[in-house]
Each structure stands twice: as structure tokens, then as C-alpha cells.
Length: 198
Image (cartoon, rainbow, N blue to C red; front, side, top):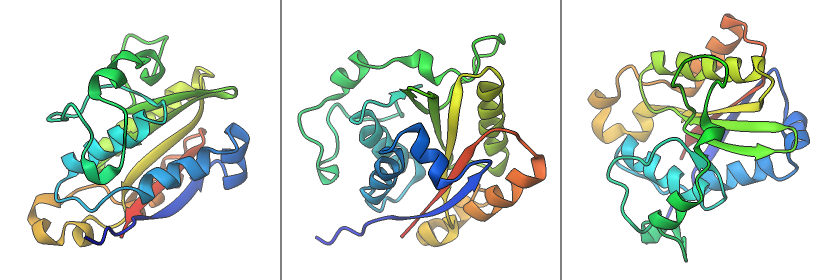
């Protein structure tokens, strides 16, 4: 069976590829590697589950386990020697908190601690409005001097990716709308926007 490797579109807002490298010299390649290992899936929830497995085996902490996540990773991800129980045991949920000073229960989907600060990653396959909450969480984390970088992962073109179910993805956030929105809302935090495409 031929497995197609996913590719990425990139937009660096208030940062650059060089800035990402200052956070950690392996960060760019690690994230692009995760995206490239994503198999083509039929639903957004399946993509979320794959990202969960691929990020947590690389020691990313997470906010919550995607609904329906099996005890073992899918075979086509080629992940060995791990289980959901192992991942839950090693999770540091505190890293995902969008704020430590406000009385708000916001959390990023994934987070990892680096010497320069926390990097938080949001996998956004919902409606356009949902990305604003992600961006706001990055802004708060930066204001609190905790966040080194926010990463927003979206689909480059949901209508192409989900051509078999276009009616189900109307209004979904996509790369170009996120790219145009960031300069328009004028945040002062570094955000690396990634669009997944075939």
C-alpha cells in the first residue's frame, strides 16, 4: 500500500525560520517530520489522533486525549513500544495552560518546554472562529513571559483534503484565512502557522 507523505505550507508571524531555530535547533525539522508522517485520513478526528500519537512519543505534553483514541497507536504510524497508558503517565498538563495568572481554564492542545520557554501547538480543524481562541491563548502566554512560540496547525485547503465530504467542512479554518488574519489582528507574539497539504 502506497502511503502519501503530507507536505506543509509555512507562514512565520513575528518570527522566522531562524527564530524557530533559536528556540531549539531541531524544532523545525521535528514538527515538519511529524506532519510528513501523517497518513491521509477521512475525518478531522482521525488527524487529531495521529497528531496525538506522533507528538506525544516525542515528549510533547497534551491537554486531553482525543475521543476514541485506542490503547495502541495505529500500525500505519510505525510507532513501537508505547501505549496510551505510558503516554498518560508521562504527561505534564501544566505546560498546556494558556495562562497561569488569569482564572481561565484555557489550554493549548500540546506543549513542550525548551530552555527559552514553552512552545504550544494548536491543531485547529474546526471553524474559523476557533483559531481566534488559539491566537488569544498564544498572546496571553507571551504576555506572561512563558511562551517562546505558538504553533498553529491547520489544513491548507480542507475542500481538497476532504473532497469526499465537502459539505462537512464548510467554515473550517484554512491556511490562507489564518495567514491573512494574523497581520490584521496585530498580535505581538511569535506564531508559526503550518498548513497541511498532500
